[in-house]
Length: 479
Image (cartoon, rainbow, N blue to C red; front, side, top):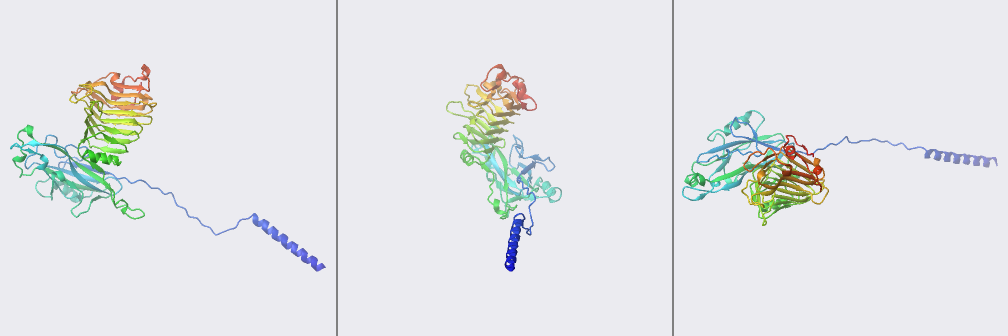
């Protein structure tokens, strides 16, 4: 009996001990072997592809930027005859941090045929030659580079010159078939000369000075990324990188823009129909390429930059064509370094909606009285921006432009209508002249007209606009 009680007591004690252990376990945690590893801050940045090209025309001459240069092979009026040679030295530098490849071409912007002594037509491009030295990569100072630079300007064949046909001059590959590559910070020099061979005779001799042939041409240098930098799969991710798109005719220009590609014009383009732009693109004209004959239409949502493009003599059946339209613009349009000559109606006509941005800077507007205009001897306006269906909350920058032909305008030179606030207009640095070039020292406010949205009372029309648009430093317009 006593043994049974002892056994029961022992069992009860064991159960209670077990319960207490479970209760204690509920309030505790298990311990494991642990360790940690974590990264530091990973920083990446975009690469920069940037090519800089400089030129000079004498061995000890000053280096000048190539962009928009007009004196590479002689200033305007330079006369070529058998044996006449013009030499230019190029320094091509990779100013970015990505390896690049590049190519060089010569583009004929325009050419006028002449009549020779025998009464036959001729073109200069048939009688000019181009020659180039081999590309030489060189250190920043001294060494073979200095000797090469000196030799380029010496007569004869101290350096090896390779001749090319003038109309087909393009340098894309080295003599071994490889592309021209520049590592970041590296530079190369190249000599190019244009000459008329001594073997040319009277076939290129003009009958009279008025019968002389003429030609306008330039160099273009295109660059794109190359297969040097690596990613997780190697160096070939950019093996199909394309050079910037070029165009020298209306069909190629329209096709490139329709595909959303930026375009560099290598010669002037006479449109055969209005040119439509619906994608975000940049058109580069290098200051010499002219778009003529028909207007350019920018779509409402597009963001378009015209850089150094010239526009001339647009036309339609009603004699009221403008050079560039941007109707119901919601996006952004920039005109930088462009020239507008003799439109029928207006140079630029934009009807912006809220949020639109318009920049017109470093441009030249010309109405010289020789065109076919809507008002007989006058255009309607030069620059016209007018909100037609919104609150007028758009922005306009008009700086450092030349307006020539103020006496050939019927309505106003600049017209910014129905804007939300005067401060939405940034202006300054502009100049004004009559068609004969006489500088204009003042214009009434109606000729540079700005008014607030749907308001025409005295407080809603800007005053003293000539002084504000010609002020030295650009600033927001005020009443």
